[in-house]
Length: 90
Length: 366
Image (tube, rainbow over all chains, first blue to last red; front, top):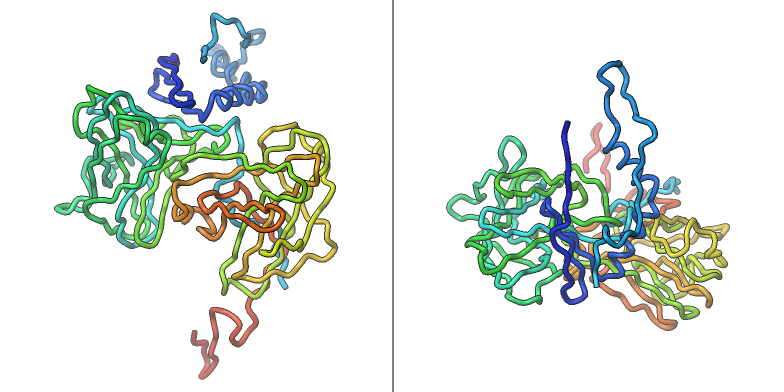
């Protein structure tokens, strides 16, 4: 089964712009800290749509013992504002 | 008269919104790393240069090369620069400061390349020398609000070998000739606004003479930031003198799905009879502040007015602000919006338009 891990490798601010670099080489640029926060808020506003995708990516599998795909019920993904898990930009 | 069935014109991109607008850059931190865009050029004419949006630099970036390359069988850059003995390429060295950060640069090739119409090729940027003392990143695509999932053109990345970008959002790049700009060399976006009564944020447009005899517009659609304050505002259509031609007043700002959100919006004029408009004439469509609500409009911003030639409608369509007495155009900005057409009337027969048929001896001669 394929795996995918994404790590934040660098966060910096230059002349007001915010740059967040990931282990896949992406350097996401935001015009301002507020725009980065707006992006975060917009992703949360999309909420269920994003979480559904994450749950499927994490848990949806084909049951080898049956002919139909099985969604493993009862699993969940939770976002929280635990400071230990936050990307801190000042 | 011909019902245009709300045909839409002038949208700079698809009107899709997901999150906030941003950019994703590709850092070229080793001499092997490359970034590029694969596209098809719509004209059989000499491509004389290219445009890219510079991301950010670290320390002292090395020299880079930008080139047009052919494609291999997988649709990836072949490494062969087009033009043979007169390669369509150029070297450039980003500055060791932030003056290029987030700005679109135009680079003229040492040699132009003339493709066949529809010829597919790649625009490639790589470091000419080892970026050991510093590096550059280049914007490869936009994200969020302009996230039109894009199968073609597409960006490509080389961090050892070429691969098509996994993030399939819209590519940011450009190539140009003496006559055209092709691609999407977007530099930034802005939320234009006014909270002063009687002032307007609008899209200036001018449909070219010869397209037809007359037309009618029934409304506006776009990615519009919804108002954050309570009250009403006006959707309007005005002429160059600022005279209202059509409108819908008293639009309640609460009549939106969300406050302050950037999302798809459409609405129609309230006039029982829509005005008949002329080709080759400037008009303005947008929102007027009625006093309590700050009206807003998102614009796509480019480095030069000429870069708007890459967009449908070209350079005759741009953002404009009415200050109560006159329109002030921002020729480097295009509203993220489109017209919805009510009527398109073709030229009258016998000499009113581009084509004049001559009938004789059993056939039509144009």
